[in-house]
Length: 420
Image 1 (tube, rainbow, N blue to C red):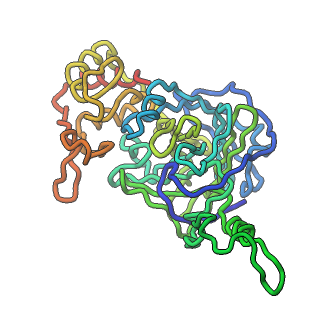
Image 2 (image 1 turned 180 degrees about the vertical axis):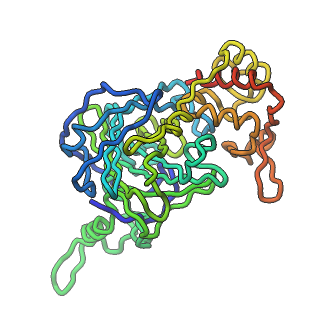
Image 3 (image 1 turned 90 degrees about the horizontal axis):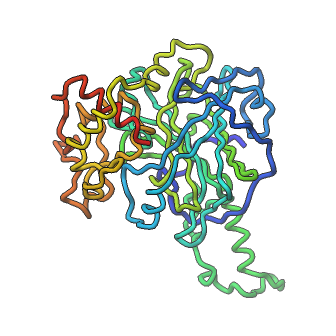
């Protein structure tokens, strides 16, 4: 079902009043014999047919090239939930397989990955949904300055499309139906009453009215330009469609969107995407998820500059780079076998190699204020503030390491790229 962008929520997997049920017929399976995105791009296959109602069953996927993309646990910013922190601390990477199709007006991505069972948001606070998201950089003309994955960065917006496993979302549903958030016991005369001499079940009628108001397909789009800036796109200026289907031990998710609209122009034929998946069984929600780095998508043969930048292999010495990291970074950052820093003192770099390009790591060293991650709880940990305010601009408390020789920078980047 095609759906115009609408509704209001916050990015990630926010808590909401939900009612869920299982979904999905059995679907075809796809082998895992894929090209490695670490060495190239997701190459889309052009088709003549309509892509408006794409799903995992479509025959067009059979002829599309498969590319494997690794997603790593997101640990940069922690959470106040100790249980999920411990669960994610030992989590391993997830390999997803990706296919892409396009025609003159639309592009469609299919992502499939292993997940043993479906998880749905429960009425209690310890039940969470599975989900997936695809993120696009609004401007990728300078491949060395791509946005921060997950939330974008100052003057580097991202567009994010999110799909969750849920049957019906009752608020927010874009209709202002706050009155429907009542508990059964608050419904007057919910046992039996008489209308025009006929007995009715008030509670049953109430449940039916709520069900009719529910949004049965949780898919949303957001624009973000850094932490705390995420805003849902509500105007009907563009359209997209997303779906998730569980079959056996695998999810198959599809996103289809216009090649060009008022928010995003992919007509150059070469653009970056980042992928995210949430596992509700592992209490994933919001920033607790698996996240890939930027991966290039090509619609037809291109000059390859974006692919070259994203897949750049560091030239430095890994051993020398680790020595530099221990000497200069371990007092504040957690990474590898370095655990002396206080948790939350600075971004956790344990998965930096799987989620950041070489260009991003270099920029973060020499100009740390280019992208500022705010910290997981600034008020609770005032001594660990990750930034200061200069007017309205956030300035990182990390000193610039632009004094390092280019060779030393290369060594550090080479080491950090091994952390995944």
